[in-house]
Length: 255
Image (cartoon, rainbow, N blue to C red; front, side):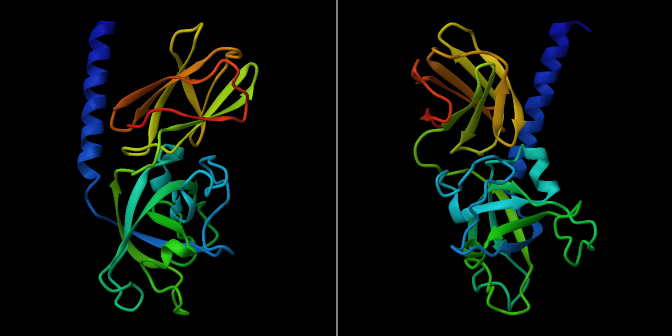
């Protein structure tokens, strides 16, 4: 088999996998949920996706930590999930209202505890660790016996204000960018960067939604190409001026 044929077959299979994933997004699936007590009622820690202060990154109280099964080694970061409490007349609020959560953190397994008593995030459980404020919108957390509730979840589109945000990090020979505020399905599967003196350079996932490449782009306006889980790509040209500095955040186009 030639290289061209192999590439074509790979692209067809990739498209088929993404199509199946998209078709299943609207299906309700079973999971469980707990909440983390915070003084202001929301999760503000940096988390495993690297978004930093979650209020500043716009995710706020609707952030969630995902168990291994859902986190998918960080590729789910930024993805949006609709979650509702089900199957418990005392714990779930009437009408089974739902909330839209953004994946921002990893809920670590605890194999010292059984999966049905404390080890909520152990493989292969599907579990959401929510903020107390978001949890209160679907369940009655005031009841003394409520620490975990049965829920259903499904993947949904992310509604974002403004464009995709690019936070530049790294050093002169280690260039890194944090991708946040992503619409559509919220997940980023590929990123490319382009300076005024370069072509499009593919970046590798460092961790969470931090992407990297080993190249010096100082003094060049920067453009970015972002590909979502569904295969849709959007390019933002010259979003960072030639005098950009590490630590700055720039806003590009949205899906």
